[in-house]
Length: 221
Image 1 (cartoon, one colour):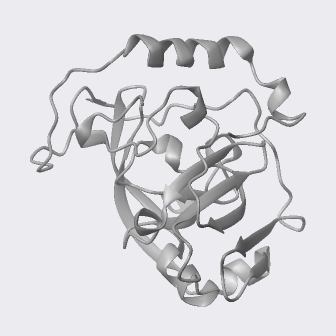
Image 2 (cartoon, rainbow, N blue to C red; image 1 turned 135 degrees about the vertical axis):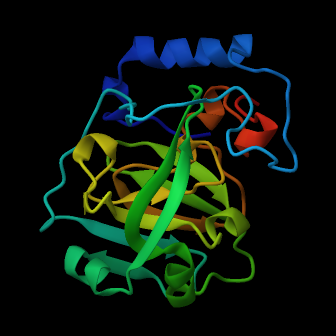
């Protein structure tokens, strides 16, 4: 179970309760799975041109001089990067779509950042590692299977559309996992913890699906 700390305790309770109610009611589910990903737009989604802002009521502002990324747990080589260390890594550009569990999708987002595969090559997860727990500066957590985190389009992104990712969208660094609903793409990243056991995160313990495949409509668990 994810533990709430003092920061999470300041979340807008009504927002959290409304989303838990969606999960209980199965809101937005269409029952039209697309296992072959035949359509670019997953079932139940609508395309938007803007980028809606969704958060837990907190938007932490992290000075670049203070930002650090910790990579620990079941890894052979733990990492502790400053902002300069992060920018010194090979930078990857990628274009991908966003699919939000609240039923909107935004196409062709241009990202720049450090690829998850590069980070994995440095951190060297141990054979027992099966999951990655993403920890954010607002106290949020979400869980990913290691094979999903290792996807070739997964980034630790710091730029969007050629500019630094704004704080309301998770800057200075957020995870981007295009193949899953976007709650799995943790904002305000501060730590990646490699574990043997699965550890469902903030929304996963509040009724959301553990896997979050948009084409399977894995909105709720």
